[in-house]
Length: 168
Image (cartoon, rainbow, N blue to C red; front, side):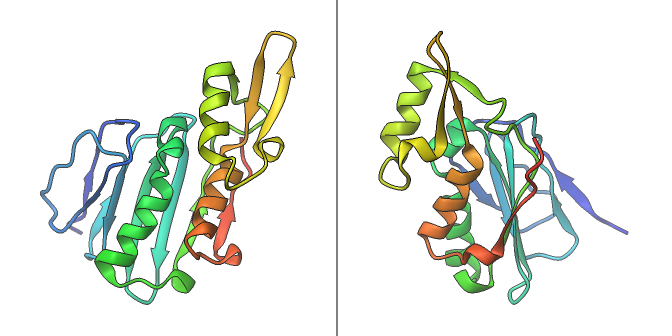
């Protein structure tokens, strides 16, 4: 079997590339999409959120690395929209999986990052829905899963098509 995996270094960006050929090299991006057979899309994750897409109608797949910086830049939403635009996918057919990642129980940030999330996503959710006060040392806990889910729902992906692993 002649399957090639393409690896990309984490850039913590909102860049999503189309993979059309087996020997393409994509570096310093955080998302890959394709509708070509025998191409797997491999990215490296630490505690960041893997967002996987599949459209069974158009046989298209996507693999998105959404760290906290990518989440702020809405990379999951960008990846989904790129699949819709590039492959003619329909929102109601797009299946999304939010894989294991750091959960709100452990994703501790300081005031500066909390404010970035608040300023970026307060239109989408009430801050108390995705930010939990940590302790007296100005630490906060962020729920990136709910943010990524709401970003996908915002562009019309049905809630029933979004599956969360709920594994921290």
